[in-house]
Picture 1: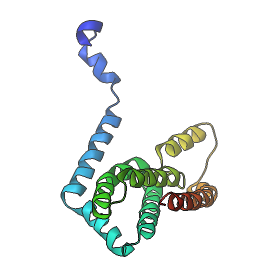
Picture 2 (picture 1 turned 90 degrees about the vertical axis):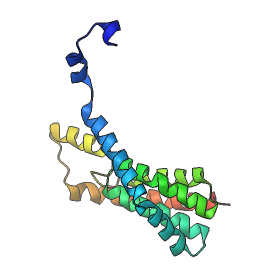
Picture 3 (picture 1 turned 180 degrees about the horizontal axis):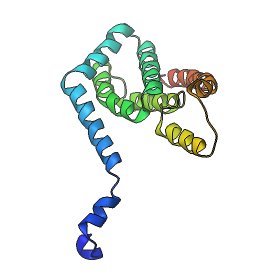
Length: 165
């Protein structure tokens, strides 16, 4: 690009979204560290053991655990951290990896709406609202969002279980 556009390197480097690049790099380092230390395999083993061999219980435990974590942390790192867990669960139980991934994605996506920090879109949306004179406290946001999120997660839980058969 430097040769084609004849721009200075400094001009190009200024336009790069370094925050996103550093965020993603840190995310992958974190997930790699959790995987390498066995923490994520331990989590998968916990799910398998606690479910007592019940596929339905295993899927519900995965779904609701991911939903809770994703409501409290940004849903993107949670989804990324669950990839090794899904691989391990699939290998240990014979459950479809793509079905477990879809279940996890639904839990992450929907539960990210429960809190102001559960999804990047919430953070941006609330910042834009604040900039335009509309303030939502954590309490006000959660008072509306948590009940709606729980209803949607409950419906999805039923649908996920119905698709197991």
